[in-house]
Image 1 (tube, rainbow, N blue to C red):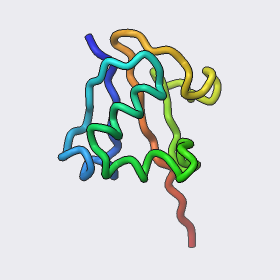
Image 2: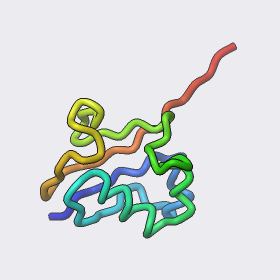
Image 3: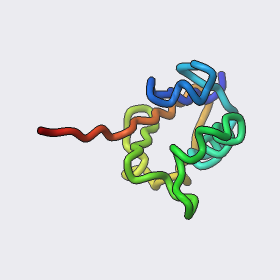
Length: 92
């Protein structure tokens, strides 16, 4: 069973409507790189000009924020889920 990347609704227009993308990556960084290689139009929504994960995008590994797991370098194993969750702001 591969690693599954769950795509938020706002990003599905860049993944041909796919809500999930399977990959065989060793780390979160590898998974994001594989995702953006497969769907280049998604890249600018995932990484900034310096190659860092955009500030408005939260990335979770099995529902745990990767910032508390060692960041993009945290290891993946078969069956893991990587969730992309864009921050949404609003107000009056």
